[in-house]
Image 1 (cartoon, rainbow, N blue to C red):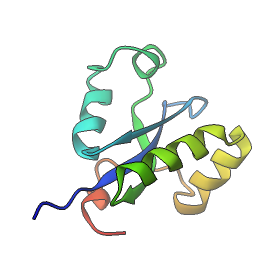
Image 2 (image 1 turned 45 degrees about the vertical axis):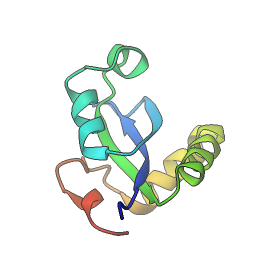
Image 3 (image 1 turned 180 degrees about the vertical axis):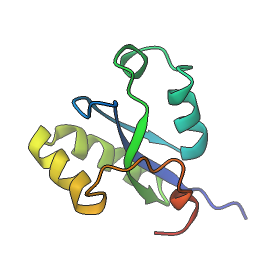
Image 4 (image 1 turned 90 degrees about the vertical axis):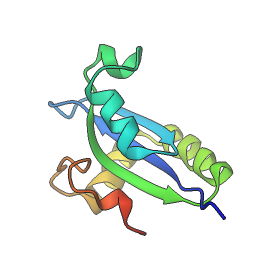
Amino acid sequence: MRIHVYYVYILTNKHHNVLYTGVTNDLERRCYEHKEKKIKGFTQKYNVDKLIYFERFDSIDSAIAREKQIKGFSKEKKLALITKVNNEWKELSHTRLFEKPL
């Protein structure tokens, strides 16, 4: 039986003045795509490629609902969410944390 895992994630740019919230079933691949500018659009245009926050879900419906909720947050609420778990805004895509159960 295959276990499905989904992630809601937040990226920023090197100046930390742009935030992007997304959802994926493969966070490692998705981070690579953002870093290599393989995804045309907002993240490419604004050079948004630093993973600073993520949550793990077993259900795509739950992940999408959470993504929509976070997208509806004010910038201040998003900043508080990020800072609560990643106070230094460290790049998380290199830590391999997303491979471990949260």
